Image 1: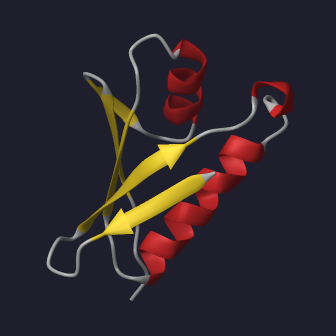
Image 2: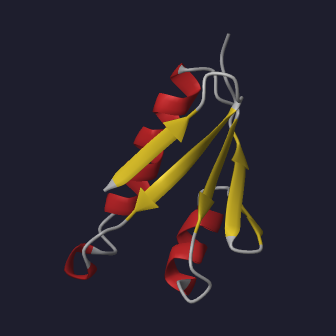
Length: 84
């Protein structure tokens, strides 16, 4: 499950929730959900994405970093390239 969120007056987006059932992990589902959220954001002209996570979720942190997100405490940020 993923839930992308954005405000019309804010050029950044936020993934509010991302969860994959433990028995379904390591199958590319989380990667696909994030890619879909990023496409939604890019289509709306959103140039920056943030997501929050718990500090103990090291496997999730590795996924986010492999997708280009940068760790900033418990938040991960990524700049998107938006085509004109």
